[in-house]
Length: 153
Image (cartoon, rainbow, N blue to C red):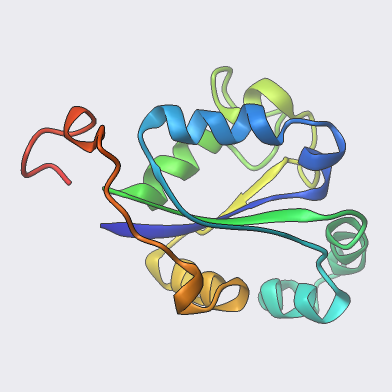
């Protein structure tokens, strides 16, 4: 089972879309194994977005991500990193296809509702920033046998 980090950003919470978007991941059959609500601090922002800190757009990114609470999650499932990113759509909501989360709910590049890890390495790094190992609870829902055929998971 692969894991990915998914953050529901301030605009998602401010717009009251957390439940609608979270349900799309659950309806897809992805397994929620960790979740917490928190406020991103400037220090945490710099840690999360380390590769962007020196870029000209970083100050507005930090201002945005620290403006309101976020919900940090970990999902588990087969090919979950790719699946989640495809469900999100293009980074800019204006370029994201209809039917994707950003295509359906976003019209911005920065305010695009949800962040998701883009590789196994970034997933491991981001999960470690937000969660202690004991906070991640792998489990097998009783309906799991109806989500993938034996050997697919």
